[in-house]
Length: 93
Image (tube, rainbow, N blue to C red; front, side):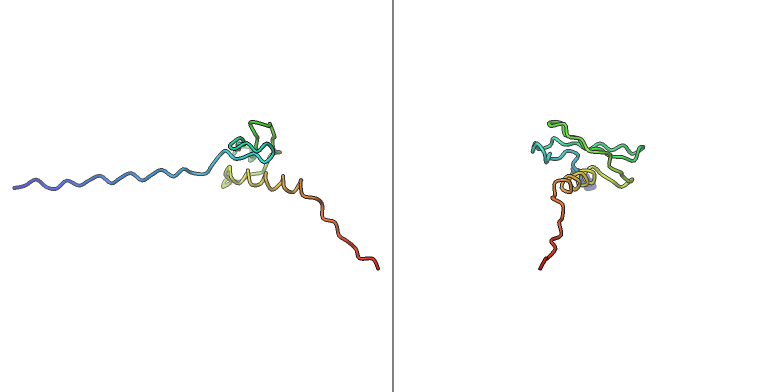
């Protein structure tokens, strides 16, 4: 009578790195200097740079909002501010 063959344990799955919480600053161009803060009770998110000290105005969040969403909203607002206003050219004859 032989011994029963033992079953191997399954290999653990590698952990998912998840969403990033630090980003590059568009003003001082330091990598990983911008961090996003989420205050779920207040329903607001904030972005701030640890190097140049730039801070965002409060950004409204939902329960599904992540740090990436807050950073992208802030970048969009920065681009809107830096974009020159659209001027209509009227044709005069």
